[in-house]
Amino acid sequence: MIAISAPIVHAANHSASKTVLVLGDSLSAEYGLTRGTGWVALLEKRLQEKKIPSTVINASISGETTSGGKARLDKLLIQYHPDVVVIELGGNDALRGLALGASETNFRDMVIASKKAKAKVVLIGMQIPPNYGRDYTERFFSIYAKVAKEQQTALVPFLLEGVADKPELFQADRIHMVAAAHPAILDNVWPQLSPLIGQSVSSSIKQSTTPVTTPGKK
Image (tube, rainbow, N blue to C red; front, side):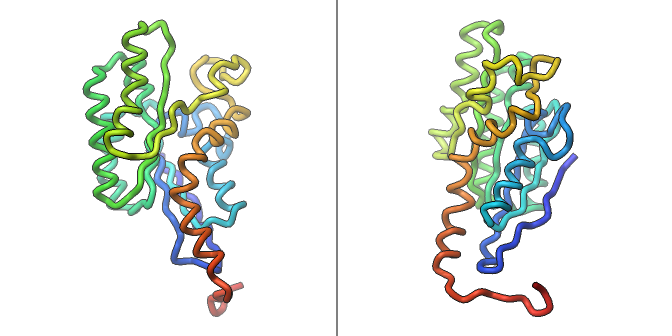
């Protein structure tokens, strides 16, 4: 299910509105949460509070893998023409023990496709429990930094930094986080995402000295 926010409009610079596409799995799809309490919904609220003109499209699906995200991405790029693509995938690849080489290729292909569509990319890293073996877990985690460095794209090293080590922030399944964890999750993403959607908008708003009014609208 794809959730699309209403555009957040600032009168001073309507033309600078940004479209953010989040392509993720259950951690971004509000699995087990009341709708509107996940980090993507909180992102939308933060952008609104900061008066950054934007549309947030949450194309995350519970259980999604990198291959599934790759298969869906081209259509999403054509449909929404995003300015920024946030890729939060990989956890389900690891939990299923899928080949790391395939996951790496899928990440690379998604980043390249997004850049060809003139979108900036934020790649979000994930870690898996050590019971999968040290070699596999370390190689899996290193994929994100490798692809981000190679493709010169923004990287959030670990989505659950500061929350994964707190048992009280997990749902009963011990995999997904409760709503109370999602503000911190957004704080992990924000430093890498905000420069891509906020700096140019903020600069142009500051330079605008005459308010722009649309006839017939307040």
